[in-house]
Length: 206
Ligand SMILES: CC(C)(COP(=O)(O)OP(=O)(O)OC[C@H]1O[C@@H](n2cnc3c(N)ncnc32)[C@H](O)[C@@H]1OP(=O)(O)O)[C@@H](O)C(=O)NCCC(=O)NCCS
Image (cartoon, rainbow, N blue to C red):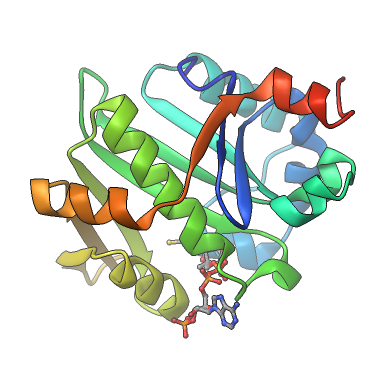
């Protein structure tokens, strides 16, 4: 979608930035990993298909995606592609109605896992989805063996609502009730800023 095309969500450990064409080569390298293909239920794509996918994430109104940058590296002046650690997406289950959205998270770089980046990126996306996009129920589908991911979503108050023995996958939901919304707002540390300005102010302009 175009809503977040110039939006940065700045947290403690990570920055969420809009997915741009210059991110695609690194993203494509990540997705050559069979482990990541399996864990994210993704098919391998050619580089051209990956650019096409980036365009569709930008243009289609039912998809919102951010690239996750490691904030410490960015603040230290590293080139953007060397700050990239993963991505986080929302997909509106009914394109006509933003109330139910599926969330997907990937920390692609193994060295970047177990440092709280995944949890903060999901928290920031929940904030953005609930406050800006009008999402009232978030859904996550997780392979039953992906213990790290299940624990992460449980920490963020997601509850299992169904299980598919065919796909060996559980579906979890987080409902944005008034109490849960307050919990999120109290527990998230975030500032929003324009992407172009952020890049320019750090000497990272294209
Ligand atoms: C699942 C995934 C998103 C988790 O991301 P992550 O950044 O590693 O997650 P976090 O660091 O926030 O949490 C992972 C663990 O590190 C721990 N941790 C976080 N910060 C820490 C720190 N500073 N010191 C020590 N441990 C820490 C967390 O407590 C958590 O422990 P637990 O698994 O025992 O509960 C990531 O491993 C991934 O992308 N895997 C591949 C793709 C995938 O599985 N995607 C999900 C599909 S549903």
